[in-house]
Length: 603
Image 1 (cartoon, helix red, strand yellow):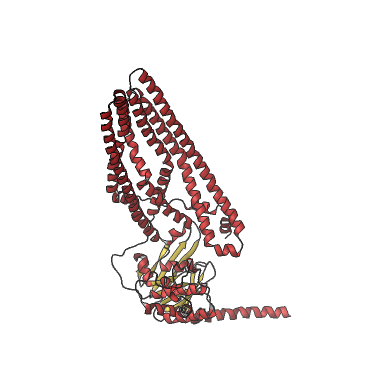
Image 2: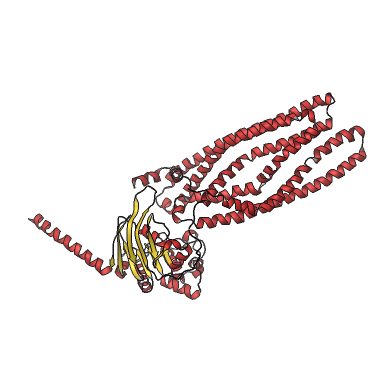
């Protein structure tokens, strides 16, 4: 507990958490290969259009060369007329090709969002609960933000830029052909630019990675504070929260400044080198013209082509930060896709279980080298009956229930449903058979009606009314001005906690599961609500297996069996009367031991 408190108080707790998690054990680029395959045709057409666009880029310099060398010096007006008509036709087709290429890249981006975005969401939703809990919420959100970086690289201006770069060799060849005396200058300049890009890769990549890590930390802290907004307001934690925010945001700003400084340094060098290339080509070209080894038109055309070539390399440097972000994002997404999901498909649909739950030798720990939260727990529940699970805080009650539900996988041991290993079933099948409500039940933005039916496979008005009556909330809903169409707000903040609890119960009952697990369901319920809940569960237990974590006397009074837990072990599963008799005998013996002591004190 001391260690947990220390980490919570630490303003850099999120950074510590992320660094402790480390990389997932596996890495998969299957998702990326699927994306490449799905967009292969579109990208191939984009390359064809890019070829035409870059070929037409030669037209303007050649036009200029001809105007200076043939039209001006020879007063060739007919030649000028033909050249103007030709260049206008070329520019018209250039416009069409550029527009078509832009449309193709938009299509690539759209397909990327549809395919990878949906695949990422489905993969995340099918990850085991422990995998989802191992990372802060802000980090999971950042993974979806990484999709934008991949989209920009695959279908944005960056993609067009990386296609255009190889055509710099074409411009260089044309310079060799029309202005040989100065062709060495763009070659030297291109080599220097490649060295500059390599240095920027080494320098900026590390800064981008650190900046992304700080963004995750900042988003995680913000998500935590907003999620706990009621606690922040009630305890007046605005000032200490501001201190944590300032430190986290300060770290992000510092990394952003360092990354920006490194990027700006290379951008400035790029601009200076571009200007120096123009000056060098003009100066050396002027000497070549004086020596009559090159024409004025050739110099101007070479400068235009050289400028285009250097601009390609300079733009590549400008996009390098985005490229580094893409590389880091792609790596993170591959790590996420490398995490094994739960079983999502069963080869054979099996019959609905009767509700017999058996488990043996269950051991579980939250950290790889941490203490056991559950150790060699075993027992049998059902079929049918009302079971109440009791035990001190930290004894492993909620952990056991999540293992019995299949939300956690045991380190050792097995959970059986009607003598069938629970691991062979999909989460969807288990959810159909087992209704589970955690301590912190959640509603989603929408109405009461949409929340009750959310996820239900079959329902009608009659079944909805039956579910809300079982949950003892129908009479409350009908008194609201908008009835079942009442908006619940984000997380159910527009309704009372008690009604929120009952809506969660109604949502569970509507699915008609054969097994029901409830973790502290009496939270936020008044005494009448607890009594109604106990009555409903007692009635359901006649045909279903009901397991409830609670110490509430009303539920204990209605229970058929008591499950006693202590320090991660199942101490006893017995009928309520047997447990009560044993407790009475223990109390009687304790009183007998106290009596002689009291008599001695009186003497």
